[in-house]
Length: 166
Ligand SMILES: NC(=O)c1ccc[n+]([C@@H]2O[C@H](COP(=O)([O-])OP(=O)(O)OC[C@H]3O[C@@H](n4cnc5c(N)ncnc54)[C@H](OP(=O)(O)O)[C@@H]3O)[C@@H](O)[C@H]2O)c1
Image (cartoon, rainbow, N blue to C red; front, side, top):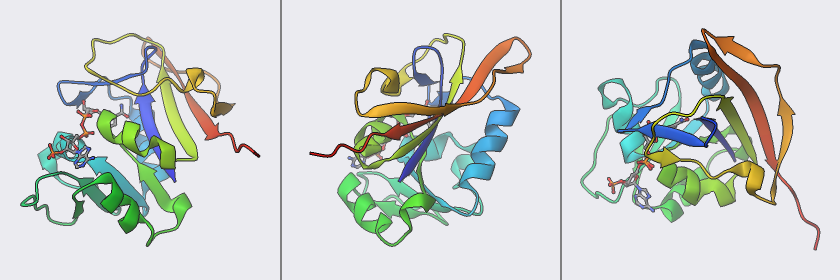
């Protein structure tokens, strides 16, 4: 299972239920990476999308504790365990956890690869991703050259969970 996230220099990811910044090539990377795949998200992240609508051309799985929650063109599940059960129907490499903070934290143990856009700026924020640079079982395995969008600098990084042999 994969996850995909954009973080600032403090691993912040959002503020007031919105992204911190929208970088066109990062949006393109997100779209191309998840297209045709399965995306897993929390109810708040779904509601942060335009019109609160699921992402097109992807299988959308939304986690909420609200048993009456209905959304067209999405599979709604009541817990992390139910999400993990539902995800057994799909190939592991086709699954992308797409946020927000609560879902990243709870789904991180199930993920093997993290696609992290690292933006070299500190924003005001209220939601964060765990700092993978400080986690022993995650390793940076690839990073692009520095990219720029106006005065913002960012890189596309890839982290992988280290397999431990007992
Ligand atoms: N930078 C990025 O790449 C990125 C990506 C995605 C999101 N974000 C940002 O992240 C922020 C949202 O993060 P968030 O943590 O506040 O919200 P979230 O994770 O998107 O959604 C939280 C909601 O998910 C449901 N949920 C979570 N754990 C659950 C569980 N174990 N069982 C049942 N339901 C569960 C609950 O819905 P109910 O309250 O309905 O029960 C909860 O309120 C926004 O600012 C968004 O823009 C950033």
